[in-house]
Length: 184
Length: 231
Image (cartoon, each protein chain N blue to C red):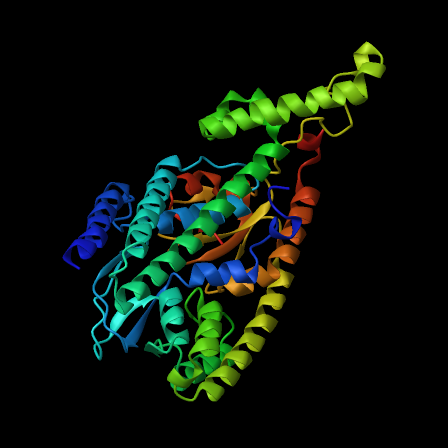
């Protein structure tokens, strides 16, 4: 089979992580490297202790070999997330977070927990936010019809989570709503 | 050392050259890799086969080849330093990542081609979306071989008027399945979009950043010009 059945409906979380790893993050390198051409662009030069912007996959690679510190993105801090959690519990819609925040925060917390201030607190905040948002996205099912459902600020991983059920539900509604004349 | 650096810098020039003509109409320059990743996502979620992006794909394949050659060249050089090994390792990692995306993209298309081989062979309008190799595969391998096989194994034993593989009888599903274009998809607007008609004769206007779940047929015209992506 050209495409395994499990991948036909949706991307796998690992594939989403691969896509998210193209996003740029800031690092403080511990080794020097000349400016080098990669397929996704040219990165460097790395000159400790100057900060540099590299894709997440590269930061991850360097971090695992203890060749850099990762600078946590602005949105991955206790204050920012606390603020978001408050918005999330008080307001009805989803609060604005980066499209791929779930994947990125997972990778960052996995490989570079010591570079993120208060990583335990960040972890538990992310979990709380996830729970509130999950409840909201399930609530969206009440509003589903055969025409359209707007979901501002939903993130990639959450979409992936609700996709199989939501698309199927909408397909069924479309099928029911189709005018009987067109069906014959 | 100077020579080795030259090898890497050369590929950088080539990269910049190859990236510039592919700037899209949004005033933002995407690298060929970003374009391919987006195409890959669209292809995976869209119910029908989309127009192939051979140009971007070829640029990337060329780039992979060049990058591999450079790496091979550096590896064989006994005088390379510790620092050099590091760059080689990073470049190698990236090549594997890009290869994965390319492979998955092509497999997704292959899957759709095999599913709808007969439809593609019968519909000249769809054939423009395929590359020559993909088209050959659809015609030769899938349409022809499977039909010959059906004929040899079963159909030749049936009465002549029951041998058809494209009968259009009333009240039964068609023998040549078509992609379900009313399948719903999640859409992410990359810029403000012009209004598109909805099935209930209203209009859908998406502003930048909005995510909408809607039938594929609604947003199909927007997908081609790149103002939206499927997520």
